[in-house]
Image 1 (spheres, helix red, strand yellow):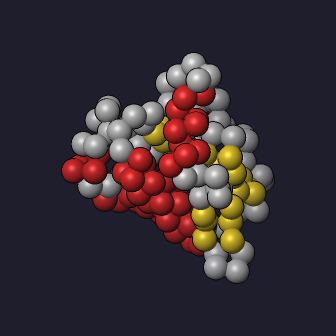
Image 2 (tube, helix red, strand yellow):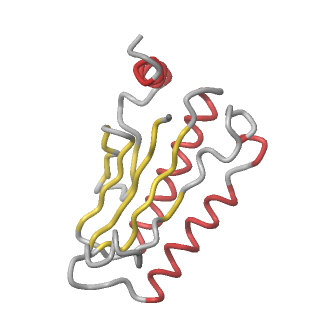
Amino acid sequence: MGISIYFSAKRPGVPPTPEETALVRGVFKRANENWPPEREALFEVPGMGRFLLYDLERPLHRGQGKLLDGCAELPLGGRFDALGELLSHWCATFTEVRRQLDAPTWSAHLDDHSLAWNEASKQYALPATADAAWYRAAVAFVRGGR
């Protein structure tokens, strides 16, 4: 069990072009590769925090107008500073994709907390509540409501 970060884009009626698909895959591949292994080692479970893009050609996703859809499960333990860096890393990645891909509907959230899109600066930001105290409270809730 963990906390997850999600990102999706929809453009009903206009499927992704091969170039858009390559762009999305390339950005997320680089982002997964650029998360330093020494930072990953700070988490309890190696490999957590990597972003998984869903296969939009599978029957579950086909015909929904999605350009991209995916998530990363974030660790419930480990160092809070590393989690903050990981969340900032994914916000920057989501920002990069959104700036390059034309879609009318975007969704980015950390479980039930939306990631705000700042129209003026054209970037995603963490929710104001996503600090160490928020994270500790979320962990306690997920582990048993304490």
